[in-house]
Amino acid sequence: MFLFQLENGGAKKEVENQVYNLRLYVAGQTPKSIEAFENLKKIAEEHLKGRYTIEVIDLLKNPQLAHGDQILATPTLVRKLPPPIRKIIGDLSNKERVLVGLDIQPKKKESPED
Amino acid sequence: MKGDVSLQTDESFNEKEFLEKSSTGIQGFDEVTFGGLPKGRPTIVIGGPGSGKTLFAMEFLVNGVRMFNEPGVFVAFEETEQDLRKNTASLGFEIGKLVEEKKLFVDYIRIERSEIEETGEYDLQGLFVRLGFAIDSVGAKRIVLDTIESMFSGLSNELILRAELRRLFGWLKEKGMTAVITAEKGTGTLTRYGLEEYVSDCVIVLDHRMTSQISTRRLRIVKYRGSMHGTNEYPFIIDNKGFQLMPITSAALDYSVPKTRFTTGVAALDEMLGGQGFFKGSTIMVSGSPGTGKTSIANAFANAVCQNGDRCIYFALEESPKQIFRNMNSIGINLEPYVTQGLLQVISTRPTLYGLETHLSIMLRHIEETSPSAVIIDPISNLINVAEESDVKSMLTRMIDYLKTKQITSLFTSLISGDNGANKSPISSWIDTWFLLNARQVDSEFATTIRIVKSRGMPHTKRIRELEISDKGISIK
Image (cartoon, rainbow over all chains, first blue to last red; front, side, top):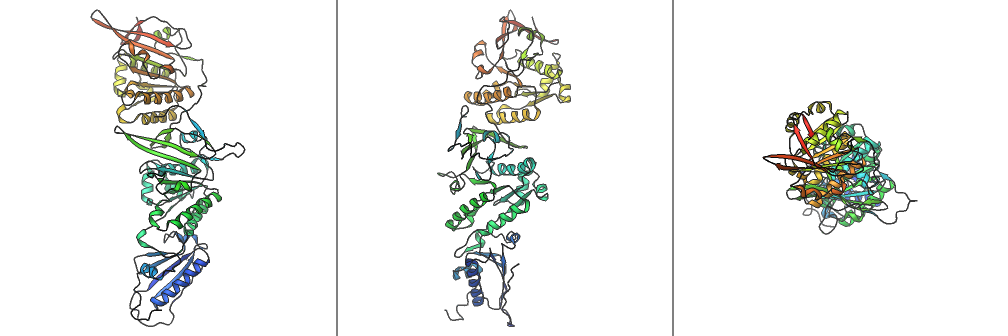
């Protein structure tokens, strides 16, 4: 299983909000899936620093895992935690939609905009 | 009801490129499609809610396992596991068992619009992965997608969805899967979302109509590429054995004509027919005014059939079995032992309970299961009351057609008023032997007379005889 875990290593700071468990379902290493992963990394680093885990599941290697989270589209990002489950399908190129989808409060007021 | 046989072939029916068919095992359906569904291709089954699409698809799969050793996959987009088991339990499908035996794979696909956000480009490879997994798990040859239209309400990007659907059907064809896709009826288009655009090898429509408070189900093959198929609307029923269609059985009147004779059960009547009784496989009509003894004659015949050790089905549309037995006992005909022995089946139904086609389907179902030598319907005039005469004619024609093909001797009774009714039956031309009973006043009594209107293939008396029914049975004065 292609399991890739990214955690913000070394952050001992107390987390103010819950930890986000994110699962990205892809079907092989395609340009779309790579792009989705890159986009996700960026968003997580920017808005969830220190309180996220990302797990990437390749359905081509593990087809039986598609059923559990009811995956039809790829790429699909599933927010497993905090509940309720949210799903975002697509290459995650639309940052605003991703944030809305994940129900993340963007840290707009604290950090300067790009 | 549409008329007689009409066949059609879509596109050129090239015998060299023989289209292989996948038998459905559904009674009557394989006949009207000359073999079943197109093998390795998708078929779309369209209908409104409650039309029977899911059951049709499921029966196709279950029969695939049970009758043709072909495992299958059922992909449910709308029902839950519980729903599916519950709805199909009454048909004896035993889905749970088939899943355990790894002959059937059931997958439930849920698309919750509220939990999905669409951002950017995507494809439906996840769906392909799931289907591939399901197919490989059991080595499936058949697959059902019920109903794939749910995806339209779950996902908003129609462009992607349609492109992927097109890809999906190509993929299924590549895998050699015989697929059944169910879809809702549309207004203006054949299906609500225009799925017929992608699944165009075979298109079937199921209809569930209410006419004068009686419900009727009909199946129609709108299209079947590369194959002959009947184009009529075929009435069907769904009962505890599953689907049953009623095709018209023979296009030509090419029945084999048996020469064996069978007693009428009344010596005097045999005599009127030249000594030997009815021809096996013939159609007999006993019509007459009320109280003239039609049921008695019908039962005497049933008695004779059973006495000979053959099976008989008696469809009683007016009296209950108990009434019939009691009445027959009073004239010395004892039928109950034959029921116990399994030779005689008395099936009584209220004519107004069902539509005509349903009556026919039910009767055919019984006949198929029992394979009797003789069938009696008493009286068919009760059926005429529930429908248009042309519909009755059509229905009875199918029935008689079926019976003659199976060489089952049939006897119908019919209530008529006066002698004028003789030539007015909708099925006159189908009748081989016809007894006409009449009540005539003689002094202060009513006497019953009997005469033979016709009896094909045998010399018979033209005299009017007086019929006497007493506790000693039926006799001619």
